[in-house]
Amino acid sequence: MLMPRPAVPRDLVEQYEALLPHAGDGSTGAHRRLEGVASTLCVSTGTRDVETAPATARRQLSGTRSGPGTGAATESGFALAR
Image 1 (spheres, helix red, strand yellow):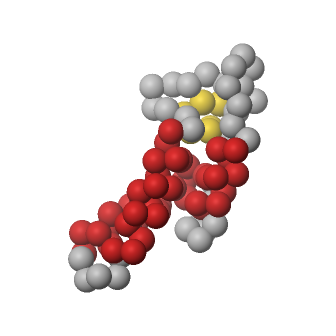
Image 2 (cartoon, rainbow, N blue to C red):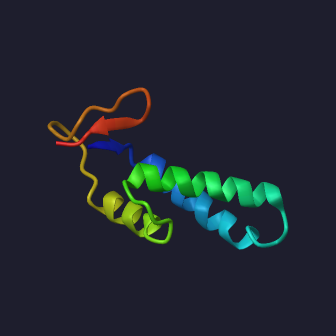
C-alpha cells in the first residue's frame, strides 16, 4: 500500500478542519474546496467515509516510522509501506 509522507495527511487534516466551519456559510468556493480536500483525505487514508478519514489520518501519523526498511519516499510524496 502506498503511504503518504507524514506532512501530506497532516496538512490535509488541518485544511479540512479549517474549512469545515465555512462550508455552510453560503460560499460555494469554500464548499468546493472542502469537497476536494475531503476527497483527497479519503484517498490518502484509504477510507471512503469523510467522517472517519481525519481520525484514520491521525492514527496513521501516530504510527508513522522513519528510517531504513520503512519505505522510500518518491517525488509524489508517497512511499511503499513495508
